[in-house]
Image 1: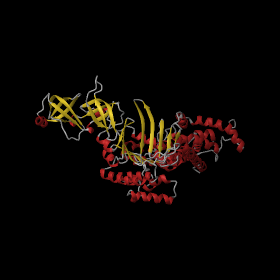
Image 2 (image 1 turned 180 degrees about the vertical axis):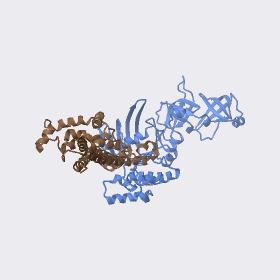
Image 3 (image 1 turned 90 degrees about the vertical axis):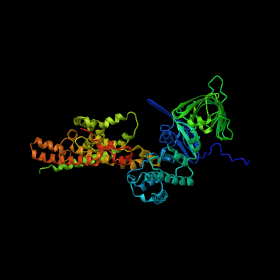
Image 4 (image 1 turned 135 degrees about the vertical axis):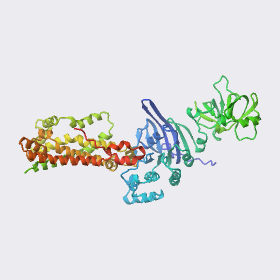
Length: 385
Length: 246
């Protein structure tokens, strides 16, 4: 690494690349209160907003676009402040230079594809306008639809028109709210290709809301997981999808093993943490496991969920495994449930393990036997207490 | 001469001036009614709707007071022109505008508020000023509602009687409109002339109504459209005939 000092941006006007937002917005309504409380950075490129409906994804986009005003906070794009509650600054929607394709697309039904695409370019001369739009329509392969009305083109074509209409304005940040939700897979992937190509040339921050895991994997540089208005995880699609980093109570309900745990150490370089299980008892157990990394401080309390079917059971101390957690214990009981065996193992905490009937016969398992449990790091699911 | 063409022409002129004025003045008012979030807006809405239920004589009576030489408006007009507003065509125009106000403004406002809000916010996101959004998105998508409002205002002005009688009196060539002429003819037992004029008004009114409903063919079926057809909805949804019931 070079030791040359980095040129510091002037403190008075620090240049922040990408979108930075910290915002708080609460909706009070009879029966259901909702609070959006977020703090995040989105670098140029795709940032996926992932989460159940009602998690606050669209509310977040509306705040960035200026359709909703946060109660407090700050939103800036590449150093240009769009909203700052401290300075009472709130740039009007029309002046934000934000591109926003909403789920319903909102194509103007009384304007042709060409007129729709030109809508955001009123400041340009007629010639420049139609030249830019023609090029972009061509790039998105809908040049032949120029004279059609939105009502007479297909769903995929409408999505393209909406994208073109927004992209042609050269937005400084792009907000896409499930723009491809209604499309079949081949159409979707073709549009995603076009979008990715466009973004390689423009490199603006793109907030992309989706429910689809495929889209997350196809597009994501970075994934933000939202739940009830809060960010519960941020990471690469691989991290976030393979091990849903922090689960909600409902998601963890199906886990046979749920333990209280305390974070002992955090290894950001490896993307893991070490947690000690069972702190609620008088003395914490001796069981220490490696789990995926979540945003948690050393000493903070979490809950760890492990599926009984995700645990391997061995009758001798295993060696040469990739799995990070090998725990010795004693088989307490073994019960047959339909076509599988449910074992209870005491290893400092009581762990439930599911086995096949064949495994029981091969290992000649019986109560009282010494066993080893093998648990992969990413089989440990974490949630906040 | 069977039909009092002078009265008929005056009626058409009055209706044309009134509906043109209501188009000009009613658009901003309707825009405000459709989009304002002022908490006391309902009071303005009630005021605009008042002529629907108010007896024309009541409206006419207060107008007469307001236009007469004892009111500031009447005095100002008198200073300007040398005569009072009452019993003149300009006075009649003012009275008719007020009396037909809800018939224009309510369809306008209904059409504006049924424009998909997402189209309006999308227009703003694409950099359009409220004015450009109004002319490029809201007005084009409200066209049937705007035509409905203008046609209703025109037809309603043609048929008004009470306010005209109170404010305008019955001066041939100045304030005698078609409906007053019919009343006169009946008073004079000239049923043939009354019938001719009445039939003419009946036909014109029917044409106006046919125009209104012809412009809103799917008005009553709107609810059947589901979400997926939003595109068609926003094209068709423009004002249902919200003709106030008299």
